Structure formats: C-alpha cells, structure tokens
Image 1 (tube, rainbow, N blue to C red):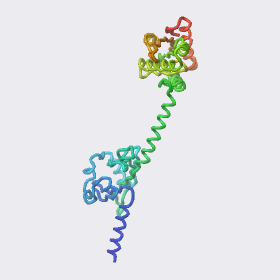
Image 2 (tube, one colour; image 1 turned 90 degrees about the horizontal axis):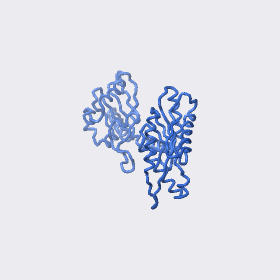
Image 3 (cartoon, rainbow, N blue to C red; image 1 turned 60 degrees about the vertical axis):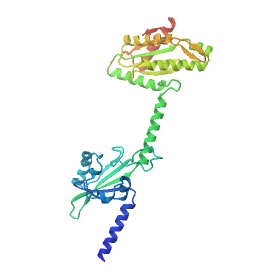
Image 4 (cartoon, rainbow, N blue to C red; image 1 turned 30 degrees about the vertical axis):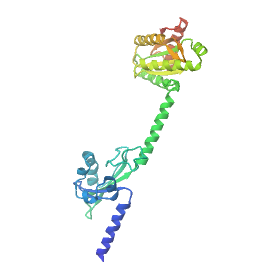
Length: 316
C-alpha cells in the first residue's frame, strides 16, 4: 500500500512538473542536471533521459559558466534565493521565441529564479533554477521605450529641416552657457539669416522658399562638427553653437558657410535660385549674466552685417 502511495505521489509530481508553463532545472553542486521538466525539453529538444546526470555546461556551452557559478554559489552557502531579470541578462538558455512568426524577437527573454533545495539534514546539495518566459513583456516594454525615444527625438527636431528646433537648441545653449560659467572656455555662437528671403518667397513661391531653407540646413549640418549644435531658430534664421571654439576659428567656418551659400544654385521646378546669408558671431564672455545676453550679442553682430550690405560676417 505504501509503495502504491509513493508511486501515485511520484506520478502527480511528474504531471505537475510537466504541466506548468515555466522551466524547472535542478542541479547539484557539480552542476549535474537532476531534474529537467517538459518545458525545458520542448524548448531545448533535449530529453530528460539524455541530460539527467550530465553537466549543464556540456549541453549549453553558450552559458557563461563564471557568471552562473557566481550567482549560484551564494544560494548554496547562504541558503537564500537569487533573482535575475531579463533587463540584467536577456536569457540564461538560448531558446527560440515561442512565436517566431509574430514575435519580433529571435530568442526567448527570460527571468530566472534560483532557490536552494535543502535535504532533511538542512544541507543544501541542490538548487532549483526556474525559467520564466517573459518575451511578450520584454518586447512590449522595448517597443514602448523605442516609441518614447522616437517621440522624444521628434520633439527636438524641426519638421521642415530635420535639424534641432528652437526649443531644444535653446536648452542646449543654456546648458553650454552654465558650463562656461562654471569653467570658462572659448565657446562661440553663430546666428545667421537668409538675405532678402521675402523676395525669394515672392518671386518663386513659398514651396521654393521652404526648399531654400532645407538646403541651407543641410549645408550647415555638412560643414559643422558632430559636437556643434545647429538649430532653426525661426523662419529663415539659424543658430550654431560651437563648444570650445574661439571666435577667430569660428570666423573661418562662418566665411566658408557664406562663400559656399553664395556659390550655391538651387534648381526648383525649372528655376535656378541663388541667395546669400549674413552671419553674426559672439564668443562667450563672463560678463554675460544670462545665456540670452550671449545670443543677443551675436544678434547685434548679425544686425551690423545686415546694415553693412549683407552677405558678410561680423564678430561681436
């Protein structure tokens, strides 16, 4: 009778391990597999009879043995569980995704729990590794994060030109101003404006004016460094922040921009459009109490360029 009860208990435990939708792996101190449930069999294509009594690392060489031992040893010694979420490590076992056709993920994201299995004497000679398939949650969270990142990117970008908009540019300009207040450097700012832009709109139409603005924005991105920050400040006005760059060097860049624009020919609907720009430059000075005073200094230089005949560069 006792044997029948033990046999029945063994069967329901086996059925339980087979029916639950998580992976169950039991290993001893030598990392020899003692239990390998149906979930693990289905996703690894390794039968329990094949893996039982053999090294876990022999079947899964992709597992970082040093990392896993560092996680498991405290479970043996401290008799306390360890948790590893997919954001710390995407997976322990490289299994394919459950839904390879509909899921964008090529593998199964996993949360892992490792807890001690104590014997009747209280000694921990085995640990149980529980594998949770969290692919759907991981993919959903990543999709939301990607969407948020894209929305954040779009909130910084000017829709017409693809360069930074005024709000984001001013944020970066304010940060650079504060950085220079803490540690003065030779940072500079350029403000430039398309000369007689109204005439372009009047003569060629507003779509042509938009194309001129787009082409100028592309030119500015092409001639500036990755560390420089270009923005469309409004209408036909652009700003360039040049960290750690003194005004004499900025003058060289500004003249290059002016000369390149002067030679530029924009073909638009069988019409050739030429235009020029005026530029004002201001280098950071400790006398500026607010970041807008720095920009106003460049704007005054731009005004001088305008009243001096346009198509020129003036340093404040």
